Image (cartoon, rainbow, N blue to C red; front, side):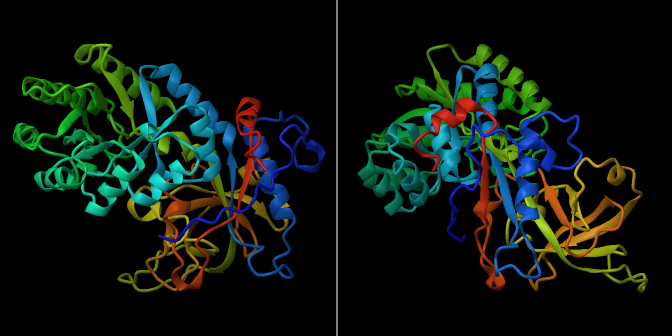
Length: 443
């Protein structure tokens, strides 16, 4: 993974009113969070002359609304007031996102030395970090000991022997298998002890004199079955009872990640609250590891069409997708890694023929055309959207944008083919309270 380079914020002062007349189709529009993002994107694109700009000035970029992170955190507290979020740092280690969440009192789920260092560098207390990786190299366990990160997970015997040797004072969470069959990423394929193995692992931890204090699970990422949390919490109660029966002082349940914003979050929260009320008394601390939920909708990505190939009638056994092929200045080796392992993000037209067309009735009424969208590397695997529809004819120099690009995007970039592994982020903040929390860190 390429290191993430952050450019300084280029947003206007947060309390500066926008001049709506500069943005097309604005007569009746309110200055909403969506407008603020679109206006910022419009200003950036309008300042670029692809024919005369310096290399890199026409690169793909993001607009990030930190106010959206603030709202999502508030929604979490409203619906899951008993559950303390430990943000999954891996999903988006953007420094402004991390600073905002830290100021809101979240903890942090870290899975590597680098992530722990990032969080500690902000001045965060080590008690607000859980080392949530069940298969750690011994030097990482030693590092956690040296910096005071006590909480960590395990799911196998070898991990217990390593911890006993290097950090016997650690506070351990036994991660168990949990599964949402609808999840895009089935994490229990790789992590989590089966229920048949938990008693044996707990007995070994007891024999080694280690301190097991909790249970953790992760139902998988991108799932759509809220009842998976009910089943997982029930299983966690069984393991809690096993551990308490052996004399462990159990005090924490970690319900992991797998949360999505939007209507599904309310349903999931209801299931989680019902499960916690049924199986865990109020004195048990409950934490979670949301990542995607907190950041995905806060980031919008923009990319320009740098080339295209019209559909060609080829043989029936050809791998040609029989639609016009668009090539953008980003790709799966850049910010669109999720196109490989998840449902590809949905492209939208932002600017066409030098005009910003977002929300333009002329664009919305145009007939839909079929396209495939390809990345900028020389690898034929680099396909962002194998098939999609866009209104009208998309040409070279047009700009597309993708919403919900805040999770597992910038943190997954590479420098393959010599392309940059980092792209500009223009920060805006649609919530004055969030801007106030960042005062002193914003500039």
